[in-house]
Length: 154
Image 1 (cartoon, rainbow, N blue to C red):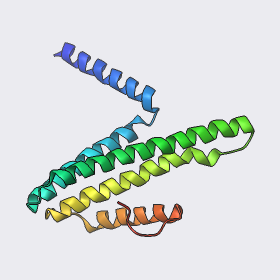
Image 2 (image 1 turned 45 degrees about the vertical axis):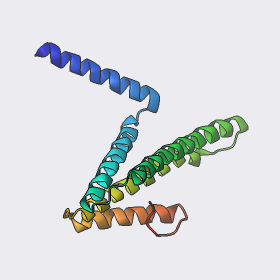
Image 3 (image 1 turned 30 degrees about the horizontal axis):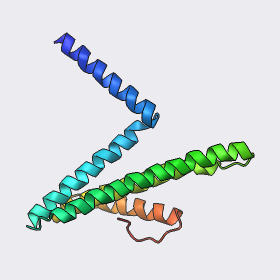
């Protein structure tokens, strides 16, 4: 049993090392977003099944939408990186740009969580009202900071 646990620990260490090398110290935020993508997709399928509206085209659109999220996140982090490097080269402080990628990731995470909760509510799962309202306030606050409107983003 100890050999199995050692192998599991070794595998886990290798996975964490690989993810840290690829995604940095906050790899868990990206993995968390990926998990939210999968959970949102699954709850969307549950909602479609619940209402008897199974549609493979809607599923494809959902997957493409999530791919669009990942492309946007990549671009946002690239902007942060590029502005930082160019600013250092030109002697201009673009320190604010370091937050662009994280801001986009947080915004998309909140939207995914809200979508998951909406799917569950439509499947008659009872959720605490404070949770739904809290995420709505957080989403509105982020939209306000970003200079957008106060409407919910999808």
